Amino acid sequence: MKAVHFGAGNIGRGFIGLTLSQAGYEVCFVDVNDQIVSLLQQRRSYTVKLANDTGDETRVSGVTALHGSRAEQVAAAIAEADLVTTAVGVGALKHVAPALAQGIALRLAQSDAPPLHVIACENTIGGSAQLKGLTYALLNESFIRQAEQRTAFPDAAVDRIVPIQQNEDPLEVVVEPFFEWVVDESALLEGAGRIDGIHYVPDLEPYIERKLFTVNTGHCVAAYHGYLAGYRTIQEVMADGKLKDEVLRTLMETGDMLVRRHSWDSREHRRYVERILERFANPHLTDEVARVGRSPIRKLSPQDRLVRPARLAHESGLPTEQLASGMAAALFFDAPDDPEAASLQAELAEEGPSAVIERYTGLPSGHPILRQALARYEVYLQLRTKGEET
Ligand SMILES: NC(=O)C1=CN([C@@H]2O[C@H](COP(=O)(O)OP(=O)(O)OC[C@H]3O[C@@H](n4cnc5c(N)ncnc54)[C@H](O)[C@@H]3O)[C@@H](O)[C@H]2O)C=CC1
Ligand SMILES: O=P(O)(O)OC[C@H]1O[C@](O)(CO)[C@@H](O)[C@@H]1O
Image 1 (spheres, protein in one colour):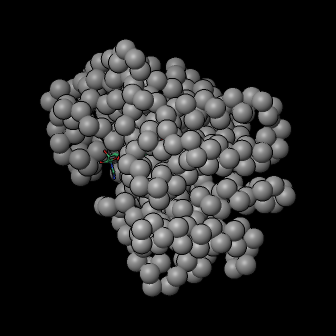
Image 2: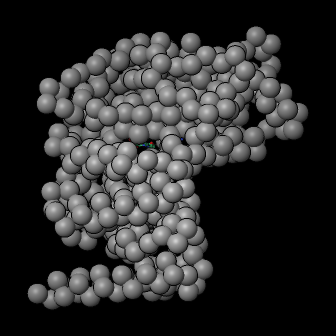
């Protein structure tokens, strides 16, 4: 079985490549990072190390790599693959689509090409569906009709914290012990086999919402409040009792909404939350606030981890104060080398908070969540000004 995986970065090497290799796939990574591609080509293996007391190591062997700029080689690899996966960042899916479209077109010319599953492993709802839309937009109607018979794009939720790596060996990757890869079984092609290490579910929505609105909501709130407080790592943030409580209270808001929406057992969800707080605090990881808060405009967008759960909570008559505070804190995030943070700061300076937050969250003017966020923004602004004066 062959897999082509786009994005040999942290989650690509540390989770997806590892899982597929352990499940018996020959994995071909595609990346645009020259160093990573050439090292993978030379060594054909790398090490994954667990962030636990014993630092357990696994060697992933028999992998190959292609540079993303080699469009024909990438398309040829896709034409032979059983599975294509991505972990490039949602915004980069549009750059994966042309090679995927070319690969799918090549497959259609071969009568014996195996069925193909394409799974986007990104932090978003409907990532594979987005990739499908981007890819099929590049194919003509008749190709699409043929492709639909033998190609499927099941959506997925992927959960494993893999920070930015600081190892001597650029291929080594340190990952937290926990992992969860959930795939929408209802979108698989008929007769498709199951991959060891993937949890297949008939309905993905509860899983992706639980993951995105707990792990990712909690993490970004820790990052934004932590950034405001001057912390560098999530581990430092979680060691600050007041901020840890801020994160917990936010997850109680999303939790109340999720428990009601999906009729879950509230005690079980509370245990899930507690476990996540422990994962954030893992002392064997050094996870930078700048990574976890990266791309604040994406994280403030209507379907993402702050606004979507807040709207769902509001529609059910549940509180949203904490989520609104997270949105307000996001407006102060100005990590260096983050293009979205830089634009946000420039727009805030020019237009003020109301116009900016309205534009990015999609919340209509005067919406109660918007009012909460703006009130909180003023509080943080005053606190920050006072802090700067003293
Ligand atoms: N790091 C984590 O803990 C987790 C990350 N994710 C998601 O996985 C995705 C990737 O995240 P990370 O691995 O952390 O980022 P990363 O920056 O470590 O890896 C992304 C990789 O994609 C490559 N890339 C970018 N554009 C490309 C293109 N057009 N073709 C081929 N390769 C391309 C980059 O060179 C880089 O090596 C994101 O959507 C993230 O939300 C999901 C769960 C956990
Ligand atoms: O990758 P994104 O969407 O920028 O967000 C970072 C998030 O991804 C994760 O790495 C894993 O879901 C979390 O640690 C963090 O909340």
